[in-house]
Amino acid sequence: MPQDVEFTMPVESRVSPELDRARRRHLDWVQASGLVTGDEALHRYEASRVADSAAYGFPEAVGADLDLCFDLLGWLFLFDARFDPRSDARPGTPSDPPCDTPNRRTDAAIAVCQDLVGLLRWPKPPAAPARPVVAAFADCWRRMGRGRSEEWRRRTAHDWVDYLAGWPTRIADRAHGVPPDPAAHLRARRRTIGVRPLLALAERVGDFEVPLLAWHSTHLEGMRIAACDAVVAMNEIHSLEKDEARGFPNLVPSLVHHRGLSRAEAVRQVCGTVERSVASFVELRAGLPQLEQALGAGRMPELARYADAHAAWIRGYHDWGRAAPRYTAPAGPENLGPENLGPEHLGPEHLGPENLAAPQPN
Image (cartoon, rainbow, N blue to C red; front, side, top):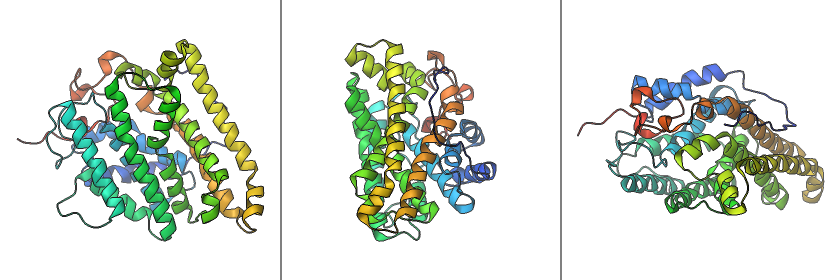
């Protein structure tokens, strides 16, 4: 990432005191779930520190709650890696079908999305053994919904379905080859950044629920959009060099292509999106007492905790992203992935299923 970029974060930096313990236990989970197979792959995954983002985004979580956060964040990053069209053709998990062409790999990734949507809509055991990526999510979804109301389950399932449905859009944009315009790119990234389901997870680990009418208010939706946009824009900066090296869509080249900006100007504009989004969140957070007055007294504790969850994720992503090997590893063409380097040389930023799963016998 461009290391000279700084963001103003009017939120205290915090991290869960159980980060190290939760990381060690999470490594056992990704192996037991079949998401990562083999010692070499486990070492690469451990070096990536992607699941550490859970300790930054949920700084008050400990014990089984933090374990759930680690598992879900690890799953999100590994699921994201399934859509990397530059990845090697080996199957991602022992039960995945062979994918010997990019098109077949894309078809398989979309099929996983369909399986996951089916799981959310009809949560019952599949007729056949589930793929590890589906079974692992089912485990997280079961733990995530424990003790939650039916209303929470419905709205959170909707957020997950929208997240999953956003991936075919990103696949189509990558296949098209022309950068989508900045507004369209931002809309698509809001869906696949995963912030909305993680805010629902904050309710679960914090053992509270936002009142129904408040959750549906424009005020709280504005807070969610501000948090999404702040994290998306920071991610676009953090991953810029990686995306440029791979030819992936990114807001910076989109601004260069569609607005005629220089790269430096586009970077400054995306940084401005971070600043404006954070400022919007701060303003909306300050207006929560007025929302409580409109909806009825006694709601402020839940509203305040929900706002704290937004703040924790904005600041937590900032702190984790600046140090994550996923973004700080070299981004030159020689480091693009297994099509250029053998698995033994891949860095911790390479988390595609082709290098986190052992080769399968014919």
